[in-house]
Amino acid sequence: QVRLVESGGDLVQAGGSLRLSCRVSGFDLYHFGMGWFRQAPGKEREGVACISSRDGNSYYADSVKGRFTVSRDNDQRTIYLQMNSLKPEDTAVYYCATDFEGDPCNSVVGGVSVHAVDYWGRGTHVTVSS
Image 1 (cartoon, rainbow, N blue to C red):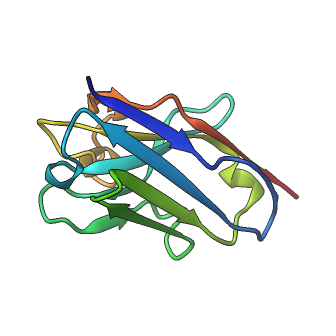
Image 2: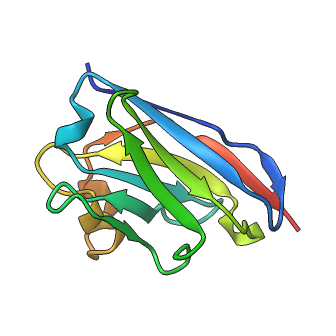
Image 3: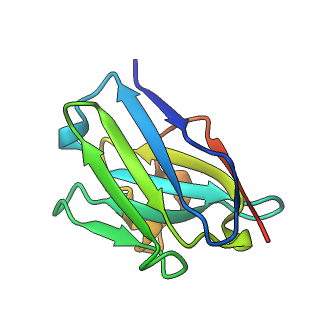
């Protein structure tokens, strides 16, 4: 059974840092692309960062470039999102996701709808106070 469980969300002041984790089970993390997405209250879900299944590189939304870093530990079956210089506009529920047939990066930087991604965690809340 495919399972993705996010953790690490918290309340943090603007300028602070958080590291989110997403532990997966039911599939081999090494073989598939992974993405981090977020949904702020009243807004559409959007892509934040990803590791591509096509070339193994990391890609980022313009709004987080230079501040967020995505990484993975295949042995721990976990992907991470290091978030630095947080801003109030980063407040959202953060989700990790994967797709076995496509590349989640297509929904982060490729203009493809996030609804094309197949498997999602339940999310973790990040609140950034000003």
